Amino acid sequence: MDVRLLGPVEVTSGGRCLPLGPPQRRAVLAALAVDADRPVTLRTLIERVWDDPPDGATDSLYAHIARLRQALTATGASIERRGGGYALGVDPERVDAYRFRRLARQAQGACDDLTRAALLAEAMELWRGAPLAGIRGDWAARMRYGIEQQFVGTVVTWAQAHLRLGRPDMVVTELTPLVPRYPLAEPLASMLMRGLQALGRTAEAVALYARLRGYLADHLGIEPGPELRELHLRMLRGGDEDRPLLRPAGRNGARDLLFAQATG
Image (tube, rainbow, N blue to C red):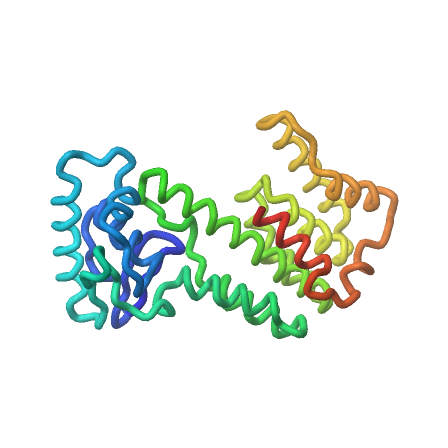
């Protein structure tokens, strides 16, 4: 049994998705799943599910919990009354968002790029699209934004590890469809530009920068950040952008700086 939040909210068991009901009921499940096996107060649940709770919010919450309990009957998971609220009684490892964060933390402490890249690849495989897709409200939007920032940081760190390992082709394949989805994530664009240059496709890297610059100018009225501008200028001048990436990075080195920029 798995609870999936990294995309549409789903529960899978025995290779199939269980019927969970309408989006609001899925929101109740998500509100419990982000704190798997820990109690969530009634007030917190209501605030997560409704931006402006109706008069009957408590009764609606009870009804959704009752329906979710029925849906989870054969999965081994349960929704328990605990600590003045409710808890989703399931091993947190069965929640994809929890596994994603755990793998990303392990990768930060990895002693070599092969291990780091493998852990991050495992985390990235859990990604199915925008987290909590289909769930409305301020709480879901905040969760979605925070998790997406973590995802971008994970991809940047994965890409840097592969560039140091001499695998720019993998970086270009993975990042080419992602960069247009996250046009404000400049570290992501930087990694793709570096990967393209390492493959001898500097003209494509320069064109990518031009598209990003145009997007920022049209939508926000700003220029790319200084690091991306400097990378672009060095490419125009024919500078070698691979050398810094081939040096081992310590835990507080360039890898962590890129991660902080992507998730900050």
